[in-house]
Image 1 (cartoon, rainbow, N blue to C red):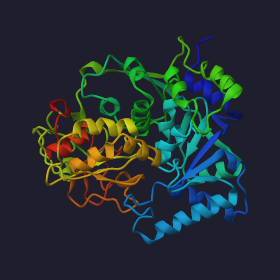
Image 2: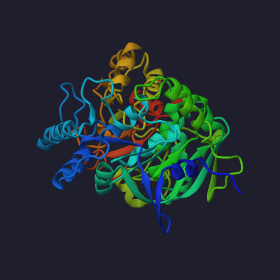
Image 3: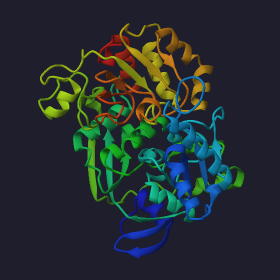
Image 4: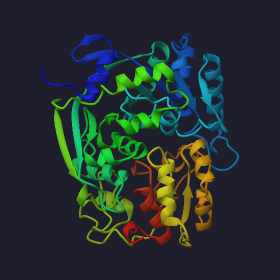
Length: 455
């Protein structure tokens, strides 16, 4: 009998009933709520006269529609504050713990889950947000759900799902100087496309993955959905266990020992078979930058703009055959659930320290959570950014999602550490280039897309 994959082990542990044709009823261990999608599900179960099945298995936070300007409130749209108040009231009524403004647990939902220890190896975790795949970095089985599924989880603590196929991606070799987790996953998306992972649960493996810290692994798993896969996972190891231990919601004492013994059995067996396999040679990677309107439109920063996708080039205001480096930028955004953790801010600060943002560039740093903000300030990173001319903002999704008033102006070009460069994603006619925190910081200083290796 062939060995079993990490995905199969965790999935099979959560099957309540096999419904036939590959469809199964699953138990949901943990559920993260945010005010944007969460309040809709809350209102729906209230409308149906239902109660939450297990409110103790959910936590909430405010992130999507909150402004990141000082003052801590909803964005400028009149519905934003109303949405927040509905979410607070419905959570209180149901008994869901909400990490509100000022709490260390407030922040982007995919940042706070791991840092609170709510995300743990082997759990099945869902959230009404497509980037829930981030949590697979700890060996959790995690994916984003829509409003009807969210309502189902609130009412039953279960989900009906079609079991996906399995894929393994090996990142071989050691990454060169100036290349990090964001470059690795963007390069993979560029190689196999945004539909390459469709229908699969992806496990990331290999030397370069093992070398990453947990925050770098979260960046890789975060963009699984941009690969077309709802689920991205990395086998838990000693780094994972060290990261999880002692966090607010993590088990303690004998329960920790019991959990640890189980977690150590989760990695894919040596003879496990996957339905598809891909390999990426990291030793030859350059820092990556997107040029078009899809995450698969990506090249090394030392490459030329390809002669492809004319509509995307027209939207982005780029000409084929010219170097991408040297393209003037107007905005830089360092933040989002992809790259707003402490290690991301440290990476950007190393480039920024002792330098100044170009006079024509407006640059923001938005920490991923209140805890990240406080830890960064304790290290003096906020002063490094402010001295360079960056704006230091409050925690939230900010300019990634554009549902909170934090927008890129029409025809402005923004180098962003977020995850999507779709048409209008950061605002009507906004032009977005996805990059790593270090590359974004380099662009802010140079005033143009720049090769961070020259810094």
